[in-house]
Amino acid sequence: MPHPHLAKGVIVLFFKPMTGIIVVLAMTLLQGCVVTRGTVGEPFQEEAVSAIKKGTTTMAEVVSLIGAPDRIVRGNDREIFHYYYYDGKSPAMLLLLLNFIRMDVKSDNLYVFFNRDGIAEEVVYGKRTGRTRFKLWPFGD
Image 1 (cartoon, rainbow, N blue to C red):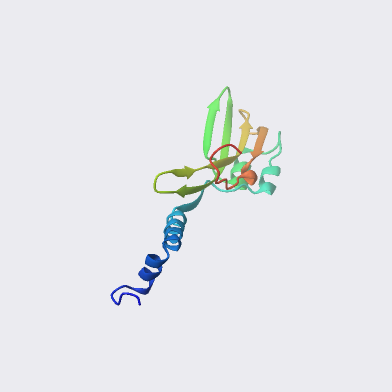
Image 2 (tube, helix red, strand yellow):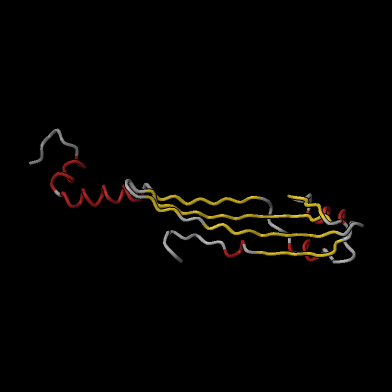
């Protein structure tokens, strides 16, 4: 007959110690899982990027298509508009004695080079954010 002052859950842990160990271990592991995601900037509209034409598109047209640049670099009679978008994913397992954290950050970058007349001379666009993944295992790929 169980002791009258013990709660039912305590009796289960008292009479079945392996079950209690498994429950405590599972609660410890499950409480430490975290998944985060963050972005910086705005994703690019592919149509807007492809509308920028070398030799004809002006600075004002680029700004109306995409918006104000994130950075402007000046030098050698040129201006460079730099637009960026970052996407990061980071799962983590936070345990009592050991933590595992892995971060995967990718970026999309658009550089538009203008000549001294304000006409687009070169357009460089790289898109990598589509390959951002959640990776829990912190060692290697």
